[in-house]
Length: 363
Image 1 (tube, rainbow, N blue to C red):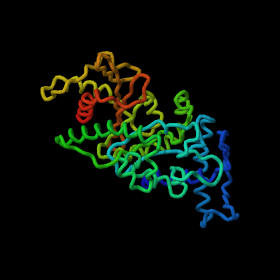
Image 2: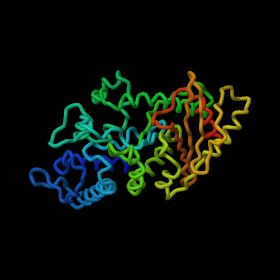
Image 3: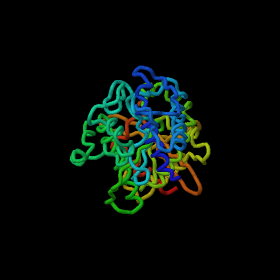
Image 4: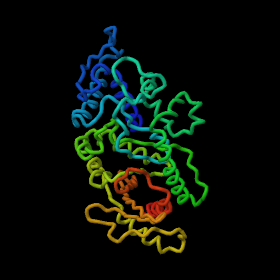
């Protein structure tokens, strides 16, 4: 089966089943109980016409859904709709890897299920209940400008809390896209028309994620390996930039290798560091390269440390570069983070990042 179709169908089916279990999970009870494979509607009739095939599919998905929660106890939040991805893995500019969807506390009307058979009008959960999650997410509507979104049937996403966060992050993403295409095509005018594709390591919300990240990583190794890795690699191959980016210190080589065990994983950070030192002395470069500290590379975790003075204040970020090698193909992942922050890099780092992307291209 096509990897993208399998991935999209899996989450469409799982979320549709989750929406049908409103009476199975109480608002304050984070325990998911398996349901019977024989699922009937209100009239006592089977939901499925082809009983054998549909029940087989239903049991498989139910078991998968149950694994996410049984593995983590109360660390994940089952009362908010999962958001496994945004965008189209078959047609994207660049791939973004996130830990998990933000939030998971309170009663955000866009994702909160509650008890009952109806949902507030003009919300994500109502739209998905009437359609499919893929119809909501496939064109990354929350990245559209207000003018375009106001003419869309999902116009109510203008008020979605996560939209502002994503729009700010998009400025950095567009900078990466343009830098890569300029380097590749030798043109200063390099506008990418495609939207990014964002995939979540864990699709479920979790208010306890920040303080239990390593525990969740360890306990979700099996479902993440099965439902995250191949779609990630597929999207990188299909992307215009052939690159995935992720923000956060927890994207260490050690953690990535937990999920990539069946493929060849390479930490390229040290090689990139050497490339940067060569580029610094090249006469073809007229943009100042921030000086990485000599002790930026350690035996435990190879990270390039970049410190920049701006407005009398030193700002520091770290960068790591990985490759997942599969059947003769490279899948490059760029990771960046700052101490105590999960924000994307400020514009003062963009000149350095152009050099970094050039070094990656020269490997």
